[in-house]
Image 1 (cartoon, rainbow, N blue to C red):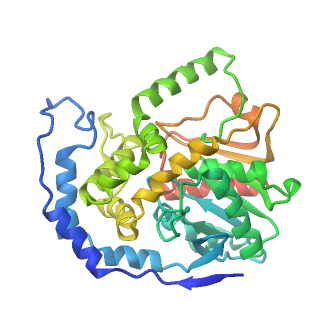
Image 2: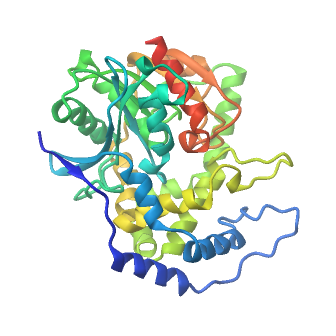
Length: 390
């Protein structure tokens, strides 16, 4: 094994440079909107971003984020040509099962910080210690505290790296995988390609986004309506995906030099993809996230210099084009957490079951794309519910 302990530290010079770039940012004209219009309709709301940057300069403390991160045990493992960072929290109980949890873009391991302890140590939150699981949360290649790949890689190769991490580095014969966003694609590929039947160690998966698609075709009126809505949503929201999947380096040149630009690009997705509707039907990003949480996630990208390599992952996906082919299926038990996802929604269950061995399905009317960060207790209860069925 090549596992080493890691304490996350800071680079004071880089931190100071980021703060200076925020202070020196030259604001420009924003569309003038009527009171009833959505201030995020053209992209990130300029008024909100200005208030966030004011908080960033005067109230936000990176040191507090470091303390949140370093509350857990961090490690790195050398796998092939990459150093992979991960949190490893041993679970309570007599025989805690390993649970591998994978984030996506524009998220990070920060999404999981509030759910790790309830999953690993449920007895501390009113539950039973025997339900505890050993939680492993890696940073994806090119993200956060993992090393940067030499060129874009995608979810198929990452799934293979994760199986090596769990079996060869951590010594688990079997494990369960969970993920949302890119994590859902990676997790599904682990279930598809790295089950015990395929020579791997994954015995079950849980996903909270419909990432890896199969060969299913909409047939019923409900399914056709879903496909039409999904296509319209992708047409309206998917320009970032085409850009990051085709010319990620062009975008990176701008974002790597602009903390404010990076924040605008990332936070717009946290606004648009989360369940943040108020009682008046209007959205407010802080219905789900505090300014500290939003900036903690952004600062992980900035302090590790990984915006560029994070968006490479989209090009890696386009080069791999992973797909559950005709007649194939994720045969391990599959749990579906169908949260209030406004972007990439699950189709009706029949279509999912054509490609996935679904043994658990839960529908929720709150918490969206970033389910673990939006509503930690609900996310924990959902994952625990699935685990109890295995």
